[in-house]
Length: 212
Image (cartoon, rainbow, N blue to C red):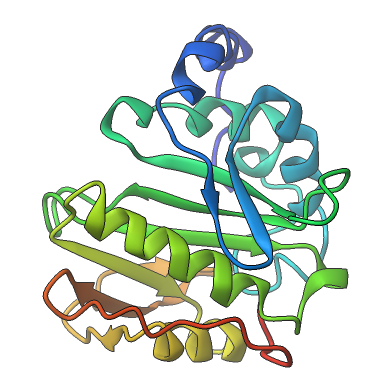
């Protein structure tokens, strides 16, 4: 398991979150609002990370890196570059988050300048196309507003919902990343990649998609 970040480190980052989150825009889709993560969202994310079904293909429940301190320590590190996490709400009801999406730096040793698409939704909001809709909007933001050359998806090879999401968003399988692992115990990850030249506004809200 990963070592939990020191509370003082997380606190120092949180002290900057008010200024940090103003650097990220609110994004919208037909059904959803994507709002930059704030400190108020951390308990929701930490709770997601304790759900066995949500974490089945991601990491071990109880991993300190997935607790509130770990989430706080990495949530606001890269907002000056336009990267970070967005909490997803229904446009008709902002009282409860549905999940989150994010663009985070891809491993520099693998490909500089590429971001990784991250997403996680509460189980009760699966199979309604929210992950596809929110992720598609964030991918377009990454290419159009941030000028990213490429975006990657890394998922567990048995995570059928995420494999379908990658295909739906137009990502292509990248079999050159055989050193990347995911899950607990770790297994070779399924990696996907999309470049700015290949990006097309093809994603539409789809009810019935087994989305996360």
